[in-house]
Length: 478
Ligand SMILES: Cc1cc2nc3c(=O)[nH]c(=O)nc-3n(C[C@H](O)[C@H](O)[C@H](O)COP(=O)(O)OP(=O)(O)OC[C@H]3O[C@@H](n4cnc5c(N)ncnc54)[C@H](O)[C@@H]3O)c2cc1C
Image: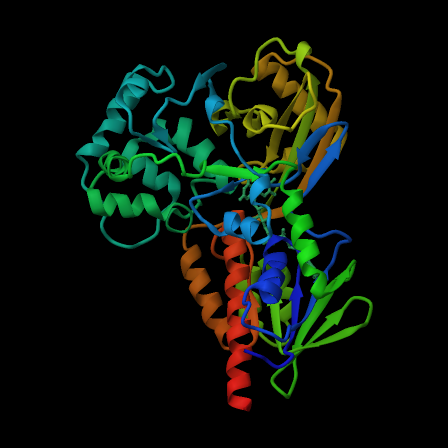
């Protein structure tokens, strides 16, 4: 099928904007005539929060270091880009997560899936949860289920089903950590809807998770690991997407300042160098607060809703060491820190254990997380102070006193959208307002999921809408 040369401007070359561009250009082989696509990016590099730095044999991730495979869109995209042979999983033999509590490191008991114990023995013998805390978690089997569809915070949900200890020691650092959120404000329906579904269906989380485990087909050996990345880091995905965007006009180092509707039902995109792009369709692949500014001139209500989404700041400090300088082996994926421990890092990934090829021979790589929803301040310090703080915490928590041979800091100011209680209502309002603006699309981490697969899915969906609108016009115009 041929389609007219619709002009599409994609604003933002993070993974969502890059995925949109990829699927616009290569998503539908039946489109013979390529779209006229322009990709506008404020910074000089593509990838947004996906950034891999390679130095002295270390592969350092600044933002994400892997993606969930249960949501298929990231793996599918890698395959579409010819990156299948580069995909690697986490090192399952070392899958162990530690939790410091009361000044001691404890292992998250085997069989605990995020918060729900699904194996009796490791849970029963774990010293992490007190006997009383375990009894309270067991009440999940008999407590009545909430069956209405109203939202609540992750903290309220976990307290209600499993008790305060499960929240403080497990759910808060794990479930809050994944979303960089404060569980007291984090929406259960927007971030972990499956747990509420399980409660409704089975009346108990433990029973529901056990049923899901039993229903799973026997392992065929073909399942993907739960988390995957690329052998040379996620920067490989950005490189491949950048190559795939070669069919688009790519404007790097150019900030979009405003989107304006034209009388002809199209749009003008005003750039910071005074340039103006004309577009039939515009994809805003930028954070909601940036999208709010771009549409402010003509869509006041949408702009106000977009602006109300909160963001918080974090930073990552990656440190490389000679293996021989460590007093303990890094035999796990790292640790997450409960807020009540009062530390100044929220967690640490042992990157070179979690994945192959992250450090040169005889070396290890770890990555500390600073800041976040509960206390942003450590992430706002100057870089050298962040490194010093991370080293102090590693000395206290892991006895790691050695001098690092590498340190890399990435600062993520106001980078993490907060899916607070009511996020789905906010989203419905935003989408209803955006639907009144034909040809305008909102994609990326502010809306329907912060993980890479969800960001990619949103870009793919927007590309699909643009392509079908284009084809519909073509049919009407014939
Ligand atoms: C430290 C950290 C760790 C993470 N870990 C994981 C993980 O392990 N797994 C996972 O799945 N996810 C993880 N995430 C989340 C994930 O990385 C992000 O949600 C995702 O990359 C966001 O992509 P995006 O395209 O929506 O936005 P961004 O990556 O923010 O891209 C937006 C782009 O728009 C550009 N832009 C902004 N304003 C303008 C303008 N006016 N004009 C033109 N361009 C503009 C920006 O420069 C940027 O390049 C992590 C995030 C961080 C920060």
